[in-house]
Length: 205
Ligand SMILES: N[C@@H](CCC(=O)N[C@@H](CS)C(=O)NCC(=O)O)C(=O)O
Image (cartoon, rainbow, N blue to C red; front, side, top):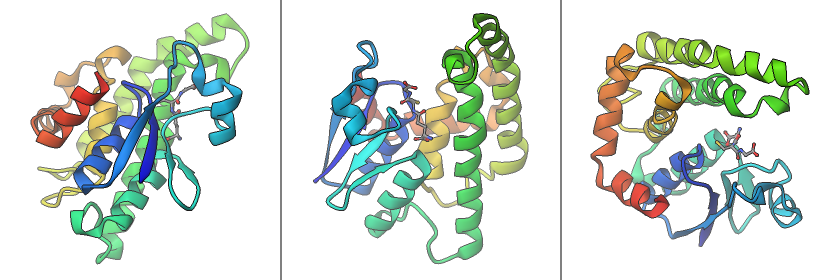
């Protein structure tokens, strides 16, 4: 059985949805951010990065959302979560997931985790003030360049869909108006209507 270490309203939601959609045999261990459990010695032993998600497999612990999503897709091929038969499509999928991970997610983190990058509280405030712009720029790039429709990669649903959905749910909290991005907003509504997504959201509540 796979074990996903997760916390509500985090990027771990994408991996949780993918496990559910893949029909995986899995369980979720909740990490309590309120008590900073992610920085406890026990959790750091499991994931020295002190973050979620972390996926415990029989081979070891896997971290980093794009890697976890791809692992799930490859381990459960019948769920068809990635185009392994098409190197170009797979390359595009990886490019999108890398963009979410390295640019959009990092822009979001500047709003609440400024201490990662600076010690000066004034610098944290400056970083926070920039979030609506930088996260908004990220979604503008997704809306105009990456998103094919009706799913992220086009006709075929892939692991990029739960990943985009997860980060799109942060928009309001980041001071970004979802109405600016109609394709992403429509995708978010369609994702929210999927039974697997509803099941996972109920489990995370
Ligand atoms: N690159 C990692 C980032 C993971 C990450 O930053 N997770 C956040 C939640 S969205 C976290 O665990 N934050 C806890 C902390 O910074 O203490 C991934 O994509 O999985």
